[in-house]
Image (tube, rainbow, N blue to C red):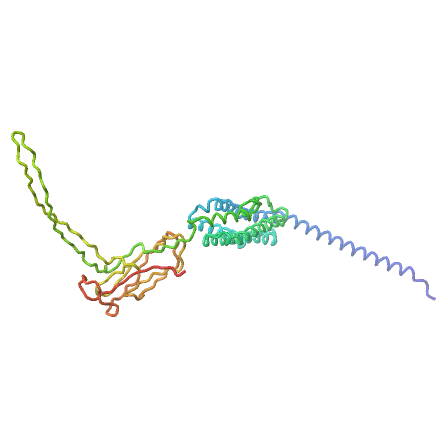
Length: 381
């Protein structure tokens, strides 16, 4: 007969409990060790992360400061733009548009690590909105001064104002997105938009009305040939000299003698004088559209010209043309010419053959066949 087995079962349960306790203890020790390692790694990397974030913010500070400097320039344009010349106003406005775009590109292409992708994205977005605002402003200014109507620029100025308001709001989001330890105080304080400020809609509309009333800002086109050299020189009609001989009769009355009364005499003297009159040539040596030059029979003619823009508008698609006997024989493009800019241009030598020669109408020329040539400049834009 078998006895009871309760003692054996109790011993097995005790051994199982001891094993469980040992496993739990080992797991707790392992968790503690891992947690400690993580804590040490985090503590060791935190200063480096803060330094990286601070470096990125410090690198962005000059860009934000440069962005702030554009606002006083805009305020100067608003106060004095209506008294400027058109080229000066256009140049300053273009510089504002270009500078704001360069600031955006500088941040967008920066390879320095930012504190967080979101922080960089918000700064890029703020500068992008700012760049769009200046672009709208520039387009509105150009529309007003080209048309002379303030109404033509109001929509653009309104869009510029709204975009700058959004840019400042986005910049504030960027500051809030910077993590702790990134030293946002290194960034300059911005005031890109404020009521009554440079980008206030009412102020921009007043600026538009001033531009529309400024007569010197209206477009003035004046392309001209400032100088020209020709090889060979054009034929010059000989000067005509006319000699005229005139006879002058002079009456002389002598003084009366003291001792005795003198007889009254009225002698007459005849004098001859010669007057020479010179008639200048009727054919200009500078072949322009109004005064073509006449060339004697020759093998070739080579014009060298200086073209100048005397207007206040940049001329695009400028073309210099050479016309022989009412037929265009050469056309040379000059791309564009800014106000006050000159361009030196050597044209190709042009053959003068029988087919390009006609009978000369000027009887004073020493031959009966010649070529008439003129050089013109115009803008196709």
